[in-house]
Length: 465
Image (cartoon, rainbow, N blue to C red):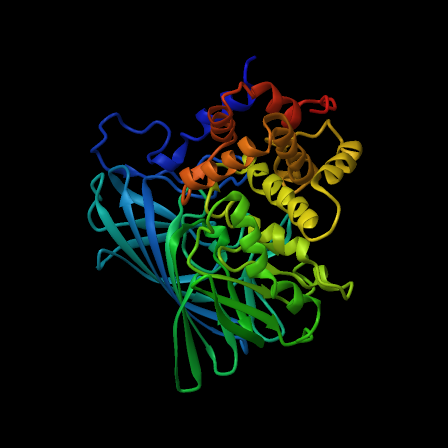
């Protein structure tokens, strides 16, 4: 076959993330402008080329009384090309000063871009630090998933969203192809919680304000970085020797379905780890919101955030918890190279729901497969579904059908071994559909391109395996 899943993937993966810009001079050591777009058509204008970020240190102060955010971001990166200037993504907010390696740098704004011109060009391979001081009232953004970005709430704020959120509250290379570590310090009025990703790194207070500190040492895609501020019941414990931090909005009952669902986080993680490999991060947790404008849950790294709609029935919903926790492997640890492969995140997370339901006394994965197979619109592809359909059934449900079809084709032993190899070999990195197909073929010793083509992009119902 022509392997249509593979042919496009390897070419797209080589776009702007590696640096430079179209028509760049042939001399690789001649300073030039870094690419102003990573080249992902699903998110035009997002991401930048010419550098690779190693880490972000974010120090922000937020006052719910006037919805004002003040921030100091330090971005540590390595130049992948000789740079005369480069961009960071930043929506709104006013930048007061920019320094590169401690020296003032010229900066301008171009829509959602912060354009930085260092006093001296950066040599290819040079490690550098950018300090940005900024402030203002953040503006939320909308996407196919719903309202996102930095959103003021009745008692604080939440920064959340996919694929857009990070650039609404800090300067960032805003694309999952450039993952980095994060240190987050959040200062808020006393009495409010300020939650983020990773391991809690201490708390201190002064003059009516409390600073909460968080550290995520595993590489993280920018859209997975979250900030939740407000009146929350925060519980800190340990699980398997790692910190477990959960939080439930004070507006939700302490013995209600949200709290009961999140309380099973450790149990669900252990179930998934037994099947797909060791949990990839240094902390666990979850946050339940009370703001009805957040109509979704999101796999924010190490600490998923759940909108209130999942618990409105009055019964616990562990399916959504299993889904978001499965993303810790599929999407967070092993992240997308480009958004058109989002089925790699959502198909596997949906399949984890099927596995968990069977384990927890519900219907079997096979029965879930049969029901979904009968209801699927096969005209809609899982791979490259288009930006408007990146959160559609073809990505989630048809993607899960493809996962189960692979399992039925290669058998349980090979299937689960392939998942463990995938999450181990790609841990902390990025991948494409082509990468997964190649790994499944290597582990199984079988040619599988026809299988994946039929189940992910074919226009007619595939034969049942």
